[in-house]
Image (cartoon, rainbow, N blue to C red; front, side, top):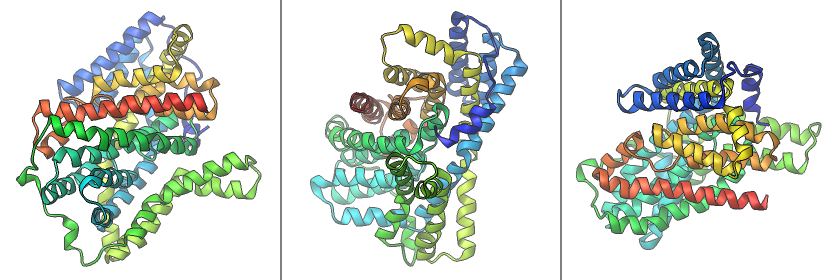
Length: 465
Protein backbone atom coordinates (compact mmCIF):
# COMPACT_ATOMS: atom_id res chain seq x y z
CA UNK A 1 0.00 0.00 0.00
CA UNK A 2 1.23 3.51 -0.77
CA UNK A 3 2.44 5.42 2.27
CA UNK A 4 0.49 8.40 0.95
CA UNK A 5 -2.80 6.68 1.70
CA UNK A 6 -2.21 5.95 5.38
CA UNK A 7 -3.50 9.26 6.69
CA UNK A 8 -6.61 9.17 4.51
CA UNK A 9 -7.50 5.61 5.42
CA UNK A 10 -6.98 6.30 9.10
CA UNK A 11 -9.13 9.42 9.00
CA UNK A 12 -11.96 8.00 6.86
CA UNK A 13 -15.25 7.16 8.60
CA UNK A 14 -15.80 3.48 9.37
CA UNK A 15 -18.93 3.08 7.23
CA UNK A 16 -21.44 4.84 4.96
CA UNK A 17 -23.09 7.97 6.38
CA UNK A 18 -26.36 7.19 4.58
CA UNK A 19 -28.48 4.10 4.01
CA UNK A 20 -29.85 5.30 0.68
CA UNK A 21 -30.55 2.74 -2.03
CA UNK A 22 -28.55 2.40 -5.22
CA UNK A 23 -31.08 4.36 -7.25
CA UNK A 24 -30.94 7.34 -4.89
CA UNK A 25 -27.15 7.19 -4.75
CA UNK A 26 -26.96 7.06 -8.54
CA UNK A 27 -29.16 10.14 -8.80
CA UNK A 28 -27.07 11.86 -6.13
CA UNK A 29 -23.87 11.23 -8.09
CA UNK A 30 -25.39 12.57 -11.32
CA UNK A 31 -26.80 15.66 -9.58
CA UNK A 32 -23.55 16.32 -7.73
CA UNK A 33 -21.43 16.05 -10.88
CA UNK A 34 -23.98 18.09 -12.86
CA UNK A 35 -23.79 20.82 -10.22
CA UNK A 36 -20.00 20.91 -10.55
CA UNK A 37 -20.22 21.01 -14.35
CA UNK A 38 -22.76 23.84 -14.41
CA UNK A 39 -20.87 25.86 -11.83
CA UNK A 40 -17.58 25.52 -13.74
CA UNK A 41 -18.86 25.87 -17.30
CA UNK A 42 -21.90 28.14 -17.03
CA UNK A 43 -21.21 30.30 -14.01
CA UNK A 44 -17.40 30.20 -14.47
CA UNK A 45 -16.98 29.45 -10.78
CA UNK A 46 -13.54 28.41 -9.55
CA UNK A 47 -13.16 24.62 -9.45
CA UNK A 48 -12.42 24.72 -5.70
CA UNK A 49 -15.75 26.36 -4.94
CA UNK A 50 -17.59 24.19 -7.46
CA UNK A 51 -16.22 20.99 -5.92
CA UNK A 52 -17.10 22.17 -2.43
CA UNK A 53 -20.68 23.02 -3.40
CA UNK A 54 -20.98 19.84 -5.46
CA UNK A 55 -19.97 17.75 -2.44
CA UNK A 56 -22.71 19.35 -0.33
CA UNK A 57 -25.27 18.83 -3.10
CA UNK A 58 -24.20 15.19 -3.46
CA UNK A 59 -24.63 14.54 0.26
CA UNK A 60 -27.96 16.33 0.46
CA UNK A 61 -29.48 14.42 -2.47
CA UNK A 62 -28.14 11.15 -1.04
CA UNK A 63 -30.01 11.90 2.17
CA UNK A 64 -26.95 12.10 4.40
CA UNK A 65 -26.85 14.48 7.42
CA UNK A 66 -25.13 17.67 6.28
CA UNK A 67 -22.86 17.75 9.33
CA UNK A 68 -21.58 14.29 8.34
CA UNK A 69 -21.16 15.44 4.74
CA UNK A 70 -19.12 18.44 5.87
CA UNK A 71 -16.99 16.16 8.07
CA UNK A 72 -16.37 13.78 5.14
CA UNK A 73 -15.46 16.62 2.80
CA UNK A 74 -13.04 18.29 5.22
CA UNK A 75 -11.49 14.93 6.14
CA UNK A 76 -10.88 14.10 2.50
CA UNK A 77 -9.57 17.58 1.75
CA UNK A 78 -7.15 17.53 4.67
CA UNK A 79 -5.91 14.00 3.99
CA UNK A 80 -5.34 14.74 0.31
CA UNK A 81 -3.42 17.95 0.97
CA UNK A 82 -1.41 16.19 3.67
CA UNK A 83 -0.59 13.37 1.29
CA UNK A 84 0.30 15.25 -1.89
CA UNK A 85 0.52 18.94 -0.94
CA UNK A 86 4.21 18.89 -0.01
CA UNK A 87 5.04 16.91 -3.14
CA UNK A 88 3.23 19.42 -5.35
CA UNK A 89 5.12 22.24 -3.66
CA UNK A 90 8.49 20.53 -4.15
CA UNK A 91 7.65 19.82 -7.79
CA UNK A 92 6.81 23.48 -8.31
CA UNK A 93 10.14 24.58 -6.81
CA UNK A 94 12.09 22.17 -9.02
CA UNK A 95 10.17 23.32 -12.09
CA UNK A 96 10.84 26.98 -11.31
CA UNK A 97 14.55 26.31 -10.83
CA UNK A 98 14.58 24.47 -14.16
CA UNK A 99 12.91 27.37 -15.98
CA UNK A 100 14.65 30.35 -14.35
CA UNK A 101 18.17 28.92 -14.51
CA UNK A 102 17.94 28.24 -18.23
CA UNK A 103 18.22 24.49 -17.62
CA UNK A 104 15.09 23.84 -19.66
CA UNK A 105 16.48 25.83 -22.58
CA UNK A 106 19.76 23.95 -22.24
CA UNK A 107 17.95 20.64 -22.70
CA UNK A 108 16.01 22.03 -25.66
CA UNK A 109 19.03 23.58 -27.40
CA UNK A 110 21.23 20.52 -26.94
CA UNK A 111 18.72 18.06 -28.34
CA UNK A 112 17.63 20.29 -31.21
CA UNK A 113 21.25 20.89 -32.21
CA UNK A 114 21.51 17.17 -32.83
CA UNK A 115 18.17 16.74 -34.57
CA UNK A 116 16.83 17.99 -37.84
CA UNK A 117 14.37 17.28 -40.62
CA UNK A 118 12.40 14.10 -40.00
CA UNK A 119 13.96 13.64 -36.56
CA UNK A 120 12.53 16.93 -35.26
CA UNK A 121 9.10 15.58 -34.15
CA UNK A 122 10.87 12.79 -32.26
CA UNK A 123 13.18 15.33 -30.66
CA UNK A 124 10.20 17.42 -29.55
CA UNK A 125 8.40 14.52 -27.89
CA UNK A 126 11.66 13.62 -26.12
CA UNK A 127 12.13 17.19 -24.92
CA UNK A 128 8.56 17.40 -23.70
CA UNK A 129 8.86 14.07 -21.91
CA UNK A 130 11.98 15.15 -20.05
CA UNK A 131 10.73 18.64 -19.28
CA UNK A 132 7.30 17.29 -18.37
CA UNK A 133 8.56 15.06 -15.55
CA UNK A 134 8.76 17.78 -12.86
CA UNK A 135 6.55 20.45 -14.42
CA UNK A 136 2.81 20.95 -14.20
CA UNK A 137 1.07 20.69 -17.56
CA UNK A 138 0.20 24.38 -17.76
CA UNK A 139 3.78 25.37 -16.87
CA UNK A 140 5.10 22.96 -19.48
CA UNK A 141 2.88 24.53 -22.14
CA UNK A 142 4.03 28.04 -21.27
CA UNK A 143 7.65 26.87 -21.33
CA UNK A 144 7.59 24.74 -24.48
CA UNK A 145 5.10 26.42 -26.83
CA UNK A 146 7.36 29.44 -27.50
CA UNK A 147 10.15 26.96 -28.32
CA UNK A 148 7.80 25.06 -30.62
CA UNK A 149 6.88 28.27 -32.44
CA UNK A 150 10.55 29.25 -32.80
CA UNK A 151 11.57 25.82 -34.11
CA UNK A 152 8.70 25.74 -36.59
CA UNK A 153 9.50 29.22 -37.89
CA UNK A 154 13.29 28.93 -38.11
CA UNK A 155 13.27 25.38 -39.52
CA UNK A 156 10.34 25.87 -41.87
CA UNK A 157 8.44 22.97 -40.27
CA UNK A 158 4.70 22.48 -40.09
CA UNK A 159 3.50 23.86 -36.77
CA UNK A 160 1.35 20.79 -36.13
CA UNK A 161 4.21 18.43 -37.02
CA UNK A 162 6.33 20.02 -34.28
CA UNK A 163 3.65 21.09 -31.82
CA UNK A 164 1.60 17.89 -31.45
CA UNK A 165 4.61 15.77 -30.31
CA UNK A 166 5.47 18.40 -27.69
CA UNK A 167 1.89 18.51 -26.43
CA UNK A 168 1.68 14.72 -26.42
CA UNK A 169 4.84 14.39 -24.33
CA UNK A 170 3.55 16.87 -21.76
CA UNK A 171 0.04 15.43 -21.62
CA UNK A 172 1.16 11.80 -21.26
CA UNK A 173 3.45 12.70 -18.36
CA UNK A 174 0.68 14.76 -16.77
CA UNK A 175 -1.86 11.96 -16.88
CA UNK A 176 0.18 8.80 -16.30
CA UNK A 177 3.44 9.49 -14.50
CA UNK A 178 3.89 10.64 -10.89
CA UNK A 179 4.93 13.03 -9.33
CA UNK A 180 2.20 14.91 -11.21
CA UNK A 181 -0.77 15.78 -8.94
CA UNK A 182 -3.37 13.62 -10.71
CA UNK A 183 -1.46 10.31 -10.64
CA UNK A 184 -0.23 11.04 -7.10
CA UNK A 185 -3.76 11.66 -5.88
CA UNK A 186 -5.00 8.49 -7.61
CA UNK A 187 -2.20 6.47 -6.03
CA UNK A 188 -3.16 7.97 -2.69
CA UNK A 189 -6.88 7.23 -3.09
CA UNK A 190 -6.56 3.72 -4.49
CA UNK A 191 -3.67 2.68 -2.24
CA UNK A 192 -1.27 1.76 -5.03
CA UNK A 193 2.48 1.32 -4.69
CA UNK A 194 4.08 4.49 -6.03
CA UNK A 195 7.26 2.87 -7.32
CA UNK A 196 5.42 0.13 -9.21
CA UNK A 197 2.95 2.66 -10.63
CA UNK A 198 5.82 4.90 -11.71
CA UNK A 199 7.61 2.03 -13.47
CA UNK A 200 4.47 0.80 -15.25
CA UNK A 201 3.46 4.40 -15.97
CA UNK A 202 6.72 5.04 -17.83
CA UNK A 203 6.31 1.72 -19.65
CA UNK A 204 2.87 2.79 -20.88
CA UNK A 205 3.77 6.45 -21.42
CA UNK A 206 6.65 5.95 -23.86
CA UNK A 207 4.81 4.08 -26.66
CA UNK A 208 1.67 6.13 -26.04
CA UNK A 209 3.59 9.39 -26.51
CA UNK A 210 5.17 8.03 -29.70
CA UNK A 211 1.82 7.08 -31.23
CA UNK A 212 -0.03 10.24 -30.14
CA UNK A 213 2.94 12.49 -30.90
CA UNK A 214 5.20 11.94 -33.93
CA UNK A 215 2.90 9.42 -35.61
CA UNK A 216 -0.44 11.21 -35.11
CA UNK A 217 1.14 14.58 -35.98
CA UNK A 218 1.50 13.41 -39.59
CA UNK A 219 -2.28 13.37 -39.94
CA UNK A 220 -2.84 16.48 -37.82
CA UNK A 221 -0.49 18.43 -40.10
CA UNK A 222 -2.59 17.40 -43.13
CA UNK A 223 -5.88 18.37 -41.50
CA UNK A 224 -4.68 21.72 -40.13
CA UNK A 225 -1.94 23.58 -41.99
CA UNK A 226 -1.09 26.81 -40.22
CA UNK A 227 2.00 28.96 -39.79
CA UNK A 228 3.33 30.15 -36.42
CA UNK A 229 1.62 33.43 -35.42
CA UNK A 230 4.30 36.14 -35.40
CA UNK A 231 2.88 38.03 -32.43
CA UNK A 232 3.10 34.94 -30.22
CA UNK A 233 6.80 34.23 -30.75
CA UNK A 234 8.52 35.83 -27.73
CA UNK A 235 12.19 36.15 -26.93
CA UNK A 236 13.44 33.41 -24.68
CA UNK A 237 14.10 34.92 -21.26
CA UNK A 238 17.09 32.74 -20.43
CA UNK A 239 19.10 34.41 -23.19
CA UNK A 240 19.63 37.25 -20.69
CA UNK A 241 21.57 34.92 -18.36
CA UNK A 242 25.36 35.10 -18.46
CA UNK A 243 25.67 31.33 -18.16
CA UNK A 244 23.45 28.27 -17.98
CA UNK A 245 23.75 24.86 -16.29
CA UNK A 246 25.20 22.01 -18.30
CA UNK A 247 23.04 19.54 -20.19
CA UNK A 248 24.17 16.44 -18.29
CA UNK A 249 23.78 18.12 -14.90
CA UNK A 250 20.31 19.40 -15.81
CA UNK A 251 19.03 16.04 -17.05
CA UNK A 252 20.55 14.28 -14.03
CA UNK A 253 18.77 16.67 -11.68
CA UNK A 254 15.41 16.19 -13.40
CA UNK A 255 15.81 12.41 -13.40
CA UNK A 256 17.04 12.13 -9.79
CA UNK A 257 13.62 11.70 -8.09
CA UNK A 258 12.53 9.20 -10.74
CA UNK A 259 15.70 7.16 -10.29
CA UNK A 260 15.38 7.17 -6.49
CA UNK A 261 11.74 6.07 -6.57
CA UNK A 262 12.42 3.36 -9.15
CA UNK A 263 15.37 2.12 -7.05
CA UNK A 264 13.05 1.77 -4.06
CA UNK A 265 10.54 -0.21 -6.13
CA UNK A 266 13.23 -2.56 -7.47
CA UNK A 267 14.74 -3.20 -4.03
CA UNK A 268 11.28 -3.85 -2.59
CA UNK A 269 10.69 -6.48 -5.27
CA UNK A 270 14.14 -8.13 -5.12
CA UNK A 271 14.81 -8.03 -1.37
CA UNK A 272 11.29 -8.01 0.11
CA UNK A 273 12.54 -7.95 3.72
CA UNK A 274 11.48 -4.94 5.82
CA UNK A 275 14.35 -5.65 8.25
CA UNK A 276 17.03 -5.58 5.54
CA UNK A 277 19.31 -2.55 5.91
CA UNK A 278 19.47 -1.81 2.17
CA UNK A 279 15.70 -1.93 1.82
CA UNK A 280 15.24 0.35 4.84
CA UNK A 281 17.63 2.89 3.30
CA UNK A 282 15.96 2.79 -0.11
CA UNK A 283 12.53 3.03 1.52
CA UNK A 284 13.63 6.38 2.95
CA UNK A 285 15.52 7.88 0.02
CA UNK A 286 12.96 6.50 -2.45
CA UNK A 287 9.96 7.97 -0.68
CA UNK A 288 8.37 10.71 -2.82
CA UNK A 289 9.01 13.47 -0.29
CA UNK A 290 12.71 12.68 0.20
CA UNK A 291 13.29 12.01 -3.52
CA UNK A 292 11.79 15.33 -4.60
CA UNK A 293 13.42 17.20 -1.71
CA UNK A 294 16.79 15.78 -2.74
CA UNK A 295 16.21 16.90 -6.33
CA UNK A 296 15.33 20.42 -5.16
CA UNK A 297 18.43 20.67 -2.96
CA UNK A 298 20.66 19.28 -5.70
CA UNK A 299 18.96 21.60 -8.22
CA UNK A 300 19.84 24.65 -6.16
CA UNK A 301 23.49 23.78 -6.86
CA UNK A 302 23.39 22.16 -10.31
CA UNK A 303 20.82 24.63 -11.70
CA UNK A 304 20.71 27.73 -9.52
CA UNK A 305 24.38 28.12 -8.61
CA UNK A 306 25.44 27.02 -12.09
CA UNK A 307 23.39 29.91 -13.51
CA UNK A 308 25.07 32.34 -11.13
CA UNK A 309 22.19 32.70 -8.69
CA UNK A 310 23.16 34.16 -5.32
CA UNK A 311 21.45 33.08 -2.11
CA UNK A 312 18.94 35.91 -2.40
CA UNK A 313 18.04 34.96 -5.97
CA UNK A 314 17.54 31.33 -4.99
CA UNK A 315 15.28 32.38 -2.13
CA UNK A 316 13.26 34.57 -4.50
CA UNK A 317 12.91 31.72 -7.01
CA UNK A 318 11.62 29.35 -4.34
CA UNK A 319 9.18 31.97 -3.04
CA UNK A 320 7.80 32.75 -6.50
CA UNK A 321 7.39 29.04 -7.30
CA UNK A 322 5.01 28.50 -4.39
CA UNK A 323 2.58 31.34 -5.11
CA UNK A 324 0.98 29.94 -8.31
CA UNK A 325 0.27 26.51 -6.82
CA UNK A 326 -2.19 27.78 -4.19
CA UNK A 327 -5.09 27.30 -6.57
CA UNK A 328 -3.83 23.86 -7.63
CA UNK A 329 -3.56 22.73 -4.01
CA UNK A 330 -7.09 23.92 -3.27
CA UNK A 331 -8.53 22.19 -6.35
CA UNK A 332 -6.69 18.94 -5.60
CA UNK A 333 -7.75 19.14 -1.94
CA UNK A 334 -11.39 19.84 -2.82
CA UNK A 335 -11.27 16.97 -5.31
CA UNK A 336 -10.12 14.76 -2.46
CA UNK A 337 -13.00 16.06 -0.36
CA UNK A 338 -15.49 15.28 -3.13
CA UNK A 339 -13.94 11.85 -3.52
CA UNK A 340 -14.23 11.15 0.22
CA UNK A 341 -17.87 12.29 0.19
CA UNK A 342 -18.56 9.87 -2.67
CA UNK A 343 -17.05 7.05 -0.66
CA UNK A 344 -18.71 7.90 2.63
CA UNK A 345 -22.24 8.14 1.25
CA UNK A 346 -21.74 4.62 -0.11
CA UNK A 347 -21.13 5.28 -3.80
CA UNK A 348 -17.89 3.31 -3.78
CA UNK A 349 -19.68 0.25 -2.42
CA UNK A 350 -22.46 0.77 -4.97
CA UNK A 351 -19.92 0.70 -7.81
CA UNK A 352 -18.39 -2.43 -6.31
CA UNK A 353 -21.81 -4.11 -6.09
CA UNK A 354 -22.65 -3.22 -9.68
CA UNK A 355 -19.26 -4.36 -10.96
CA UNK A 356 -19.94 -7.86 -9.66
CA UNK A 357 -22.91 -8.12 -12.01
CA UNK A 358 -21.38 -6.34 -14.99
CA UNK A 359 -19.26 -8.19 -17.50
CA UNK A 360 -16.97 -5.14 -17.68
CA UNK A 361 -13.35 -5.61 -16.59
CA UNK A 362 -12.38 -3.45 -13.61
CA UNK A 363 -9.70 -1.61 -15.61
CA UNK A 364 -12.14 -0.73 -18.38
CA UNK A 365 -14.75 0.33 -15.83
CA UNK A 366 -12.23 2.66 -14.17
CA UNK A 367 -11.34 4.16 -17.56
CA UNK A 368 -15.01 4.70 -18.50
CA UNK A 369 -15.81 6.43 -15.21
CA UNK A 370 -12.82 8.77 -15.62
CA UNK A 371 -13.85 9.48 -19.24
CA UNK A 372 -17.34 10.49 -18.13
CA UNK A 373 -16.10 12.86 -15.44
CA UNK A 374 -13.44 14.32 -17.79
CA UNK A 375 -16.02 15.05 -20.48
CA UNK A 376 -18.33 16.61 -17.92
CA UNK A 377 -15.92 18.77 -15.93
CA UNK A 378 -13.07 19.39 -18.39
CA UNK A 379 -10.49 18.80 -15.66
CA UNK A 380 -8.12 15.86 -15.87
CA UNK A 381 -7.21 16.27 -12.20
CA UNK A 382 -10.84 16.34 -11.05
CA UNK A 383 -11.60 13.31 -13.23
CA UNK A 384 -8.62 11.41 -11.85
CA UNK A 385 -9.36 12.12 -8.19
CA UNK A 386 -13.11 11.53 -8.44
CA UNK A 387 -12.81 8.35 -10.51
CA UNK A 388 -10.09 7.01 -8.22
CA UNK A 389 -12.42 7.44 -5.25
CA UNK A 390 -15.22 5.62 -7.03
CA UNK A 391 -13.14 2.60 -8.09
CA UNK A 392 -10.95 2.34 -5.00
CA UNK A 393 -13.00 -0.60 -3.60
CA UNK A 394 -12.18 -2.60 -6.73
CA UNK A 395 -8.52 -2.68 -5.69
CA UNK A 396 -9.19 -4.70 -2.53
CA UNK A 397 -8.52 -8.11 -4.10
CA UNK A 398 -6.03 -7.02 -6.76
CA UNK A 399 -2.29 -7.70 -6.93
CA UNK A 400 0.18 -4.84 -6.52
CA UNK A 401 0.75 -4.64 -10.27
CA UNK A 402 -2.97 -4.62 -11.10
CA UNK A 403 -3.66 -1.90 -8.52
CA UNK A 404 -1.01 0.19 -10.29
CA UNK A 405 -2.67 -0.55 -13.63
CA UNK A 406 -5.99 0.58 -12.12
CA UNK A 407 -4.37 3.96 -11.40
CA UNK A 408 -3.10 4.15 -14.99
CA UNK A 409 -6.53 3.26 -16.38
CA UNK A 410 -8.01 6.15 -14.41
CA UNK A 411 -5.21 8.46 -15.56
CA UNK A 412 -5.71 7.49 -19.20
CA UNK A 413 -9.46 8.05 -18.98
CA UNK A 414 -8.91 11.48 -17.45
CA UNK A 415 -7.25 12.69 -20.68
CA UNK A 416 -10.07 11.76 -23.05
CA UNK A 417 -11.21 14.42 -25.59
CA UNK A 418 -10.34 17.81 -24.11
CA UNK A 419 -12.91 20.33 -25.34
CA UNK A 420 -14.32 23.78 -24.59
CA UNK A 421 -14.71 23.26 -20.83
CA UNK A 422 -10.96 22.58 -20.44
CA UNK A 423 -8.56 25.48 -19.83
CA UNK A 424 -5.85 23.59 -21.71
CA UNK A 425 -8.03 23.61 -24.82
CA UNK A 426 -8.07 27.41 -24.86
CA UNK A 427 -4.36 27.71 -24.07
CA UNK A 428 -3.44 25.54 -27.05
CA UNK A 429 -5.95 27.33 -29.30
CA UNK A 430 -4.54 30.78 -28.51
CA UNK A 431 -0.86 29.81 -28.60
CA UNK A 432 -1.19 28.15 -32.00
CA UNK A 433 -3.54 30.76 -33.41
CA UNK A 434 -6.23 28.21 -34.32
CA UNK A 435 -10.00 28.41 -34.32
CA UNK A 436 -12.22 26.06 -32.30
CA UNK A 437 -12.71 23.51 -35.09
CA UNK A 438 -8.99 23.34 -35.83
CA UNK A 439 -8.24 22.87 -32.14
CA UNK A 440 -10.71 19.98 -31.95
CA UNK A 441 -9.18 18.34 -35.03
CA UNK A 442 -5.70 18.46 -33.51
CA UNK A 443 -5.50 18.92 -29.74
CA UNK A 444 -8.79 17.24 -28.81
CA UNK A 445 -8.18 14.23 -31.05
CA UNK A 446 -4.59 13.93 -29.79
CA UNK A 447 -5.89 13.73 -26.20
CA UNK A 448 -8.36 11.05 -27.28
CA UNK A 449 -5.59 9.04 -28.95
CA UNK A 450 -3.54 9.22 -25.74
CA UNK A 451 -6.50 8.06 -23.68
CA UNK A 452 -7.48 5.12 -25.91
CA UNK A 453 -3.91 3.96 -26.65
CA UNK A 454 -2.89 4.09 -22.99
CA UNK A 455 -5.93 1.97 -22.11
CA UNK A 456 -4.88 -0.55 -24.75
CA UNK A 457 -1.39 -0.88 -23.28
CA UNK A 458 -2.80 -1.10 -19.74
CA UNK A 459 -5.11 -3.94 -20.79
CA UNK A 460 -2.21 -5.75 -22.52
CA UNK A 461 -0.06 -5.44 -19.41
CA UNK A 462 -2.90 -6.82 -17.30
CA UNK A 463 -2.76 -10.00 -19.38
CA UNK A 464 1.00 -10.36 -18.90
CA UNK A 465 1.51 -9.35 -15.26
